[in-house]
Image 1: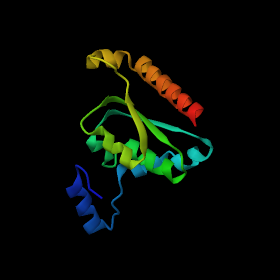
Image 2: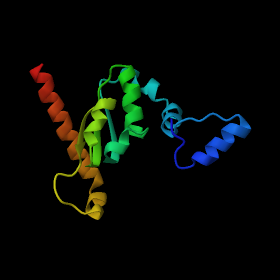
Image 3: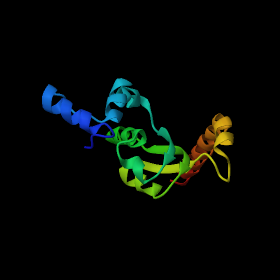
Image 4: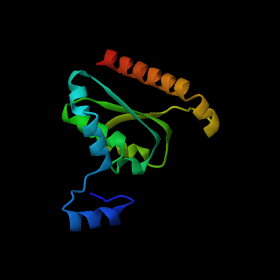
Length: 136
């Protein structure tokens, strides 16, 4: 896939140093042994500051969802904001996405209240999942 912002450097290293091009998200997820950590979970919750159409281009939430889907584990995402065309993430393993804010808020206020906003969003997401489980 793409070489990212430093593509020229990567191409040079591949040409002259027999280097291998690897996506940063894959390196990080391998380093934290995500596959091993998924062996005993039923649901993955991942997140990103802003989720939009660009999220599908090898950003962490998509990498996490890709690996979770190998184990048939559903993935939901919590985002600071849901931007343009965010629903494309549903085609890449993220089954549901929600924002931590539900109305106008400044970036400063969101940053100051991040723990509260994320906690509330996760709690509400789990409540929806619980309702869904009761319906099945």
